[in-house]
Image 1 (cartoon, helix red, strand yellow):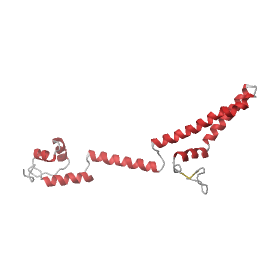
Image 2 (cartoon, rainbow, N blue to C red; image 1 turned 180 degrees about the vertical axis):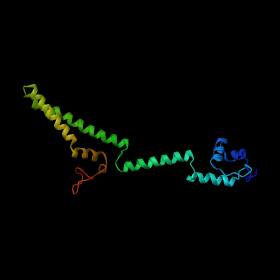
Image 3 (tube, helix red, strand yellow; image 1 turned 90 degrees about the horizontal axis):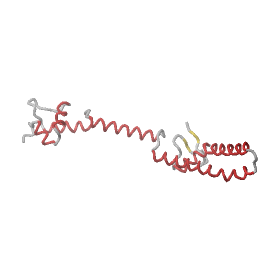
Image 4 (cartoon, rainbow, N blue to C red; image 1 turned 120 degrees about the vertical axis):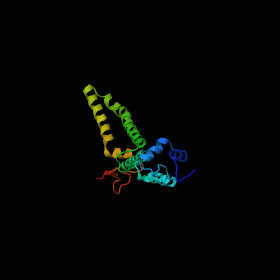
Length: 174
């Protein structure tokens, strides 16, 4: 076989690529001799150059796009704009557990108080006050930071530990 004058069929056989692939190469500038044959060394150099990013191959474009998206996502995570699903689920689970504990403590806290009350309005007021106190406590920044610190080893994105008081509630930095 003459590697200086390969036919299309010979190029397909040697490279192992399909005829459709070789035809695509021809359309996108694969080097050919004036007589329509191929010089093997030139074709290989051209293929290597394309694989290094010197072409607009659909496969290479998909790879570049995928890499760019992955890099963008990583940067978003580092900036604290997005969080991994597992970490978010773990934080949510901790928040729900804290809420559950506080609400389950309400009957023990309120039973002695409501036993002595005579009117429904008084009972309602005590229940509503206790529930609101529970919800307010759960929404407090110190509680949120405590849950976050139990879930993650480092402070929440955009926050830093309070100065001089490691482990205390974090302050928002802007």
